[in-house]
Image (cartoon, rainbow, N blue to C red):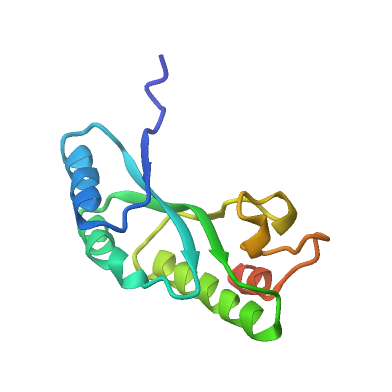
Length: 139
């Protein structure tokens, strides 16, 4: 019906098995791109994505971050600062490995599926948090 449509595989992709399965789908021509759901906390090790990102870059496969959020325990200065750094690290992966985009999994904490853990770039009153500053500095 839509020969111009692009089919994306969307997954968590932090396990080597799922990464390989996604790469196999691309190799078989069953998907056009890979979307990574990054539902993180302050201790998430982003290096788990490196084998996949290296393969995607080497094969010139389209990819993006489709669902970024970073849960934090509270809204102290330190937690907000550390959350912003996690956003920065995810954004740097997009730049370094040729990702097409980075999309957050919502905009404000009050409408998040993880609202009690303050995961998004805007707070419950829709005021920007340091994570928003990281994302807008990139523009």
